[in-house]
Length: 579
Ligand code: ATP
Ligand code: MG
Image 1 (cartoon, helix red, strand yellow):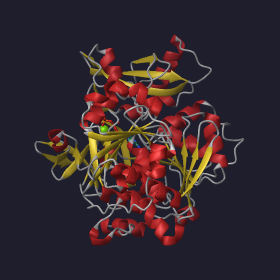
Image 2 (cartoon, protein in one colour):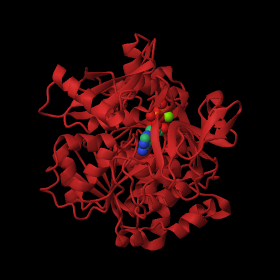
Image 3 (spheres, protein in one colour):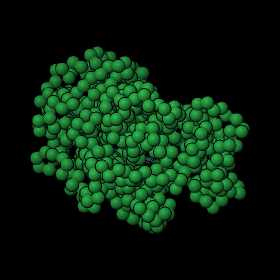
């Protein structure tokens, strides 16, 4: 590998929550033992996240600091959030909703959204968050698939995105509007909460009762509605502790939007279940704002996405110098492959380790990760967390064949971890296809090395076959961004008569570089030198941006469909897209 292993100092290893002994002995019973539970084997995510801490005397501990776009700052203790979620649950009940009903959230990163999510769960109802930036149609489709009984949103979003079609969705009984006023036919949340009781005990749920519906990012096709249960909180508590080193009081910031599974699992549930002090930031990525937050809030653990780091890399190596980031213990990222270049850059510029995490909406929580106790191989996703059994397999008829060390195959997991999805809503066949030979098949290709580290290769759909070689786009993209001019890259395969497929790359340039024939040659030459002529892209196309999902993932299938003049498919999650 081109990048050397980053060794962790002994004091960091020793202070890590996850050591080899825990890894070796861990069972799911150990994860469940991190919860308090409710009598009779019942539990409730909201109880684990809030009420149990209040009952244990931590009601005055800081739970969440919210930073608004206009400089506003609001602090919430565990008791505050426990009280507000009780009132929210009481409002739902007062309007005739019952356990099992589905409540959708359509709001930016605001405290009301956190209250709505946990208040819904407290009432035993099912919560489904949506991106506030979705257009009316993606919202309507998802609420229709989910059989929405209630929606929590803002007046502006309601008028722009809901009002026109509201009556088409007869299941929708209640629309709650944040603030003191509401349009006709809706209920204002402020006065309703003020009139509600904060004496609402979390409804005892069976661990297998549905709690959340998360729609996948739609990177590879039509988004799926993954159903998760209350018992998942055991996994959130445990992975928060071991992968993200959350301890009571840890200053923690997850940049993800709650419209995406990361923003709920690790933006709300895991941190609160671990009694951390989390930060919720309304602002989208603005370099100086984000660095100031890391400094001023004394953030210790920062959970973000590769695109944020790649954007920072564009700004140059000196960006972090003016800031005091001494509180930071490490950075972590999820959602897309973390290029080795970014790991090394993060390590150098922040002076802290950078941990890649792999998981998906379906897994509900982090599965493969670099942890504080591990040395880091830049470009590797790390190792399976305790309790997880991962494999590299190839489908073989109705079963699978297990691949050898170093062989590329589909990443598979032994089912049974607490936060695993229990269904794709209304899509039984699609769900059943995820399982074979006793494995859950992830749809991602990966490789395991001799030390047990896992390496992401690409999505099964994105694999390129050229002149007898199998090429994962990630490897090519990572080599491309090592070129000084390249900020981001997306690689696809296009049909070719002789080679089967040829590799085509789309790149965005760093500031100070302009598209030119010479630059194209230089980038291709660099890739050839790094990867060899068979694997290097035959063509490099310059673009201002790459098409991305709202969760920040490059949509390679869209680049390919356009190139081949094929239908674009479901693009409901498409965020940015200029050529
Ligand atoms: P859809 O399933 O609708 O096509 P999606 O798979 O992008 O969309 P998510 O569940 O949000 O929806 O994303 C999970 C996927 O993101 C993983 O299956 C993997 O392909 C990719 N991913 C997440 N983390 C990593 C990582 N650390 N390294 C590489 N890929 C990652
Ligand atoms: Mg997926």
